[in-house]
Length: 157
Image (cartoon, rainbow, N blue to C red):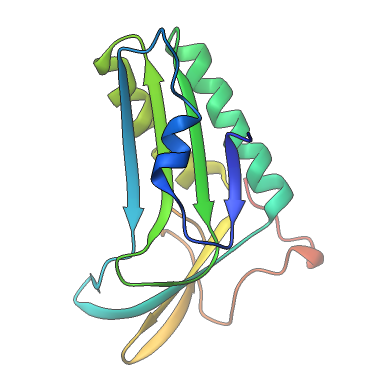
């Protein structure tokens, strides 16, 4: 059972939670990032996610290792969806178990922030009146002419 995945199918939250269940855990927190209808005053119709999958899975696993190092007894599972997602669908599910709730909450928040920092996943926002590739998950870089082309040496830190 892989704890870190990129998938093209809807995410089953219960399956992600099961990946971190253990007898030592006193808490399991989940984060479900969903597609919202309104962003900065624009009505979103849908999102499209793409990823450099081998590296994305590797970076998700790295985040899991960082969590286990920072929070003793913690365990994480992360699944991010790619492809076309409609309003209300889950784009990412993170589950973290730990002996105590505070660590589970902190580690879960850490996971989503690290995903946005280091995982090579790009999203295309499709609005009623246009669309745009967002260059990174922190939404600090846009690609008005399309998504980045990794084959031409585009790097993602």
